[in-house]
Length: 418
Image (cartoon, rainbow, N blue to C red; front, side, top):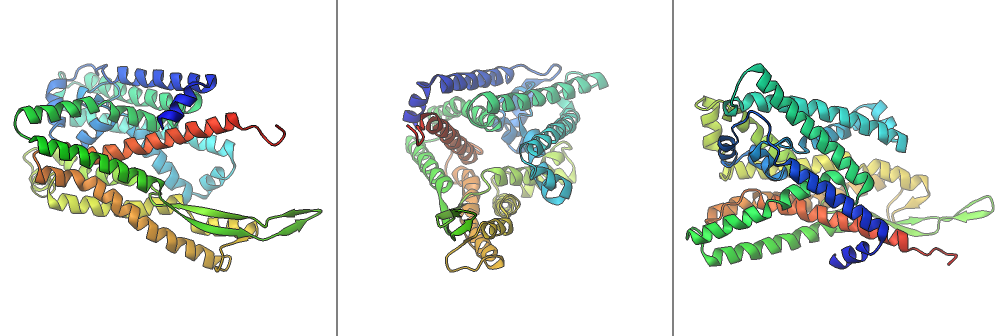
């Protein structure tokens, strides 16, 4: 990976893109320290560190949520809007037709996604401003409105920044913003480990085991992310005019982790949302119920969390990969899977293969997500969402390096006439 980055830096165009990306990420980090006016950040930070969904948002936003900076909501509304648009594209025929129009159709869907992002950001900002009213210095209408608009503007700016990185930089801008936010927390996490050791809360052996397990998790993430089953496809020869087409072999790559990290974010949002709402009303029956039975680290919480991740993995894989459409395209171009008849038998075979391989990816995601519960239970080290953060960081890093490598191959390709 480092060789790829070093070689890419030698190419002027790629060096310009990489420099631009780094500068935009610096802008993102600077914005994470510009506070929203009128908020008691010290009291809010203590509340967020208690764990829960807000703590997860703080990890993704790179600490901006604990500071309640203008980027406190991060890029989460954009992710939610993108997921909603993907679901609507399947449910609404007009959007599905728009998605099949090519580049112009994708541009229109991207525009709708931006509008949806601003709307969702405004709704979330208003809800946060009202829900966290206890941490406002002034609780009048103007102060709440100012906080809500500041948070919405911050998310809209991050969305623009992410698209700018995708267009003029390297990699996916939205993913890199999340990546930068998580990586920026590494020094803080390392400082907490050192404090635990100095306070005799955690022994040296526990810290060494923690580092070893973190390395093993990284290796497992790389293995699962790169793992895929290749279904062979053979194309029959056919004559069109005076030319002969086909007669070649290809394959359908079925990735083990087709859904990425999206199911983890889905499951975390679903399981923590009711508890977070109840947290705004301390002393209520709902608050006592969720605090007793669904506290982070409890076995009931862990089991439900794992089951939701497995379910969402299958759900998201189903909406992003359509075996019937793949089978129809294979049949359309004269292809077939050896030993399988074209049409419905091919679609059924791909569906069975996808279901089996998705089970492995779903169980892996569930184990990765609930690993901090085991870590907290059996050791004195309490670092929430550590394995989930590793999953996001490793996935984004691998995807970015692949894109850089692809651009290097494209620029160094000599062609047939050379």
